[in-house]
Image (cartoon, rainbow, N blue to C red; front, side, top):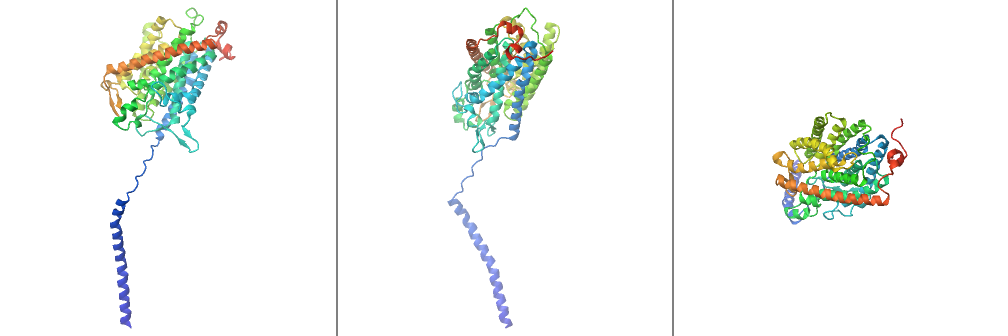
Length: 492
């Protein structure tokens, strides 16, 4: 009996030991056949997820947009308002406030679409009318806009808002040239026409291009370049608006000063600024907001933004000093109005160059801007004989031209500049020669001057035919605050 029990236990142990061995062999056999089965049925490659906007870039661009808004309301309004007479202070504030709002709405209706969608070398298309396609409410999806780096998108609505502030502030700049005598209704008619037929095409010609992600191979570079705006195709450099904003507005301003005629009492009566404290506050806020204007134009929170920020800071300070010392030398006394004007001159001149030049360029451009624009609002203004009330031409057009041309000089790596990618497929910076780039810059300046001057003249004439450009003489003498708006800035 005991022997039978021992034999049964031995048999059970043998079976127990053999089961794991058989399981291991079966597992090995399965493993051996797995590669063959995988080879017979290859796995589908995982889809590459689309690039996601960087939260830091988005935050920076939203902040920059708010800073540019600050440049107009209240900065430019206070800067201009302090330089007119007290009876026209409210009128100046009203014009800036309303024109900024008007252009912001038109930008969202058709301006953005005609500027930043593919069309021809002069105008974009109609794909984004009323911002169509930027946001799909049903799917909760946002369209993306390109920046200057591959696979680094930005929500398109952020770019829409950022560029809206550029368009609006450009139109507001023109207001200073014919301040204290224009009909409010004529101003609005002119702005609609000039924005549509001058700002939009110039901005498209200078800034529209397919974006870096479109350059997928060396063989497509020429085809993609051909889709860009005319001046982009030429290779014109304008980081933040020397041509698009300042030359464009400055030329429209001087044309307006000629067409509108001189103010009553010009050259005979004292037409002094009524509140330079307001002007100084406005200039200071302009300097602050301009960091969004220039550094924001990098479209990313990156090294280019840092360079543009520092150049903007430095060139402005240099221009304040050069204008002040120049005025001190030639007029005997340094003035607060001169220092404030020098700051704006430096900001204007560094705008096209902000991310396109190195620190040496910022020094030179700032120092030159103060002196050249000082001449622009004194000697050149007398030669032209126009009543450019707040020196829009002398500061913005002259400073913009200076900055655009010097960008062609100091973009050179030999002078500390960063160069500019001449092949967006390889993303390598290049620079042909200073002479060649200055010539390209000069052509871009010429196209901008011609476009703005022709459109502005026609737009002023149309406004004059519809409602008349100037207020009657008795209203101009009483002041536009009361006669045009029924209010006064001050109750004393």
